[in-house]
Image (cartoon, rainbow, N blue to C red; front, side, top):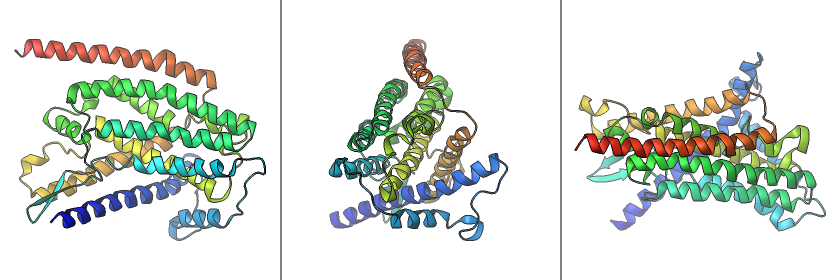
Length: 345
């Protein structure tokens, strides 16, 4: 029985990673199609019907490009940088509950790679390690533009992680748990956190853009100033790992936003229809991925709509606006909880 449970758990983890990679792969095509639409052009349409084989063509091109390591670069760290960025991006999707539970022969199988009661803390720990991949790559390149891009990435990520962390504390105060599944259950029992935490939601989404280095927060790879930023010296698949990890981070960020503030796999009033538990789980999975795809589209829409910030504007927004707003949100949330407990006694 334990062996069967282990095999099932392994299959769930494999499926989570496979779906993450597949969505991130086709997010590259979606981005180019959306960019084409917003700029009144077609976008890629030559590789396969409607361009659906374009991600495969890009992968083949990157794999067969010439491998090049600068003569003055640190060879091993030059390779470790993009590998670490990709590893941390993939690891963060393991604790996200993509659905409720399937009941098969009396055994409950959660649609979640790893079930832990500190899931949110795990995600923050893994995401904070991702900056090391950028720092190592920028420093190992032995290029001043790469190093400046890496320093920008580190300062930007650290600054916005503070505001993001404080915005999440308010959610934890309401749910009373670090477990992402419990946070979803709390929203099922009450209302979605976007209603209870509108300010925290806006802060978190803004910080998610900065954490993913997406426009208008893509200062670490600003072409006009830094040639290409921390991956200036990279080519072939090592450059591909850096670029691909950005899309995985975008998928994970969208999943976390949907889970924390938009009910996750919750569909209002679904439980009142009297459907089979497995059917409810499937509907919940579809609903969650619908929310995720919306936020991925939102990331891309903003990228092709807003211009890039100046670096001083970027840091001022993080330290002088978002952090004070996150502290204010904490105070308001704490006061609201105390007032609710007082009036419901």
